[in-house]
Image 1 (cartoon, rainbow, N blue to C red):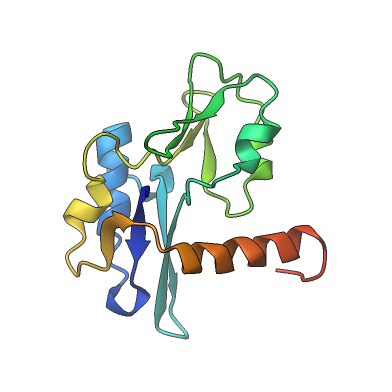
Image 2 (tube, rainbow, N blue to C red):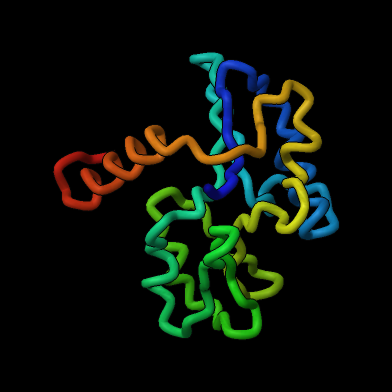
Length: 159
C-alpha cells in the first residue's frame, strides 16, 4: 500500500513549520506561498487545516495535462510534474479538485508535492506537534474524500 502524508488536525497549532520546511527544501527560501503543503489558519474558529496532494489513484491533473508532463509512479504512487515537458499552461492547476498544484512564476512551471521521494517528507520531519505523519494511506478515509470530490464534480454539491 502506498504511503502518504497523514494529517491529525487536532494536533495542529498553525505554526506553519511544515510550509517553511517544504519551501526551503524545494525553493531554497522560507516562503510559505511557495510550499507544496498548505496550512490554513481560521482565527475566528481557532482551527488550523493542513492540506497536501493526495497522490490520487486517478489524477485529474494527469488527465488534464496536454503535454503529458504529469506522471504517476506505479511503485510509489507519487504523481509528479516533469519540468522538461511542462509548458506552464496551468491546465493541471485548474483540474486539481484540492488546489494542490501551483504555478511558480519564476520557473513558469507547475509544481506539486512529490512526498520528497525517496526520503521522508520534510514537512513531516519538522512538524513540532507530530500532527503530520508519513504512513500507509487510510483506505476508508481516502474513499470518503474521493466520494466527496465526485459529488462536487457531478454538481450535486457546491463547495
